Image (tube, helix red, strand yellow):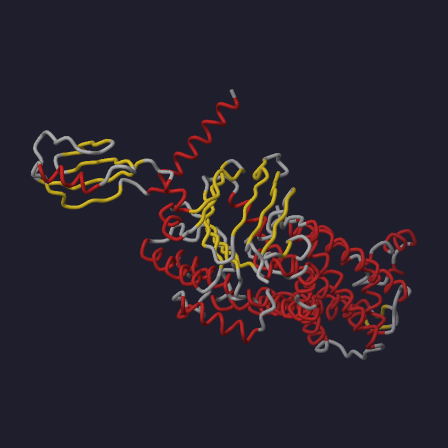
Length: 262
Length: 315
């Protein structure tokens, strides 16, 4: 009888294989995965940070460019973590090479973790690239490295999970762009990346509080600048609660074989 | 102790969401070391059965056991025994040939170094080693099929299932694939094959099952099945025959043209007497071949009688 240890070792090899394959995929097509976000975020920093920001003055006690850098990094992390998993998993499903994994003894949790690792790696790599570019525009001193690192990791994980669920339900390539276009982008831009919610009228401040991205952006900004519009504890609670919720949904869908097994 | 069966299906039933009953409770047992053919017309349920065995299709009811491991209760062990060569190409065409095989090893827990060694062995055996660095999408159809065989073998499964492995493959390549599969089977791997080429099943398989309309209508050895044929047909190329043929000891004889004669003999008749009768009339037999693949003949008859009985039931 095969031991549990042997099973663990097999699962570990399988996890490493999926993660390696996923990371290799986005590195192979770096012109489509790494370069565009670097260019877009550089343009944000030039236009909003340097050109317009110089006329805006201070926000939250910091220069405008300093204020927007954490949010711009978060946009890169969120969109790339999501995009990597949704496009990769959907392609594997659409072109049926996901069957290579489905016929193997790889458990559902390992499949999920392997794909999340790809999204995680791309989100963090693009985030690091944008951080490096932002250092050309402003000086950044990390206020709290633990909060900065933990929030960016949780954010990447959360949106990679979102991408995975989107890919499971998607039937066409159009379906993988609907959520990013109509949900993710508005929530990100309204998530306090370019402004402090204290600039909004009280009613809209309250409305903003239902946007989970607001908490993540502000917590990350706190980690870097030491400034936040919201309570950091709530940000962690929101991130962990959403990760638990989306993680459970993803595992349930895998167990049911939704969109994968007829 | 080795289990009695490489594959055991019990009461396998599948109803799709649209209400189609693809499998209506099939039972099947394949012994370890067998070369087994699963035959049936399009839409009979073969691919659904293979889909369930390989976990790509969810069954509605029934049980699957692979080398004694229940697919529901011990999926990790059951799936580890199985290698699948599907009918459709299902690999990432942007990955190289070697990456595809090595990664598949990884999904089964084979460490990268071992997977690379095995990939080299199987790609060489299947004449794909010189293509190892090419993206899979650039391969020809025959090469893609061989790639899927190499991929299915990298974790060295005890049971290999091939769904129409030689579809669209030219005759020379088909023969070399047969040799490869025979060798694999001789080495101890149990093989289950679905095919539309009944010559393939007759040449390779020791036992077969025929599925029709979601049911197994025959489950026996190829030899036993062929014994059911009451007559054998031959086509003779002849010379020296006049307009009238002599009386021949055959079940039926048809003159196709001046130099071609088609005959059918029963199990009690023999060709020596036919040749002797022709020789006495001064007719020489230059060459001879079977009228059709014997298994094919039987297969068609079985399906016809199956659909005939269904029609009677409907009335």
